[in-house]
Image (tube, rainbow, N blue to C red; front, side, top):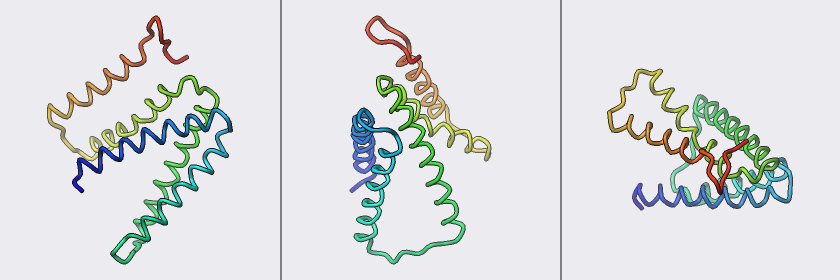
Amino acid sequence: MNWQTLSIVSCLSFGIGAVLISSALKTQSSLPSMMCYATGLVVTVIIAAAVESKPLSFGKASVVLAIGSGVCTGVAVLLQFAALSKWNDKAPWIILIGALYPAITLIYALCLGRRFTLTQWLGVLFAIVAIVLINLPSKTNTAPQ
């Protein structure tokens, strides 16, 4: 498989997952949903480890960083689930705002001195404009309150 196929399948999986969890949160609170979500992640890790052909190796620094990443992601997911559980009618906006996390990576890269091309900056600008336009109130759709 090439990177394009993997990226498209990843995008579809994220989207389907968002729809599924939004539906689950209509009938149960955020913590039980988070526990079920985590169970799905564990199943995925077990399957991935079972099909891995290389021996697994763990470096101390990498383990600490990966666990930190997992904790941050867990907190983000739990907060998003809590928001979806309370304001499920705002699911598109909650998920959209949550999807802005790559902006943190961009800020980090800038702090490290990375320089971006004009095309990359235009991509950032278009993403911001898209978010603003999606959140503008209309006659049939209201902006988040």
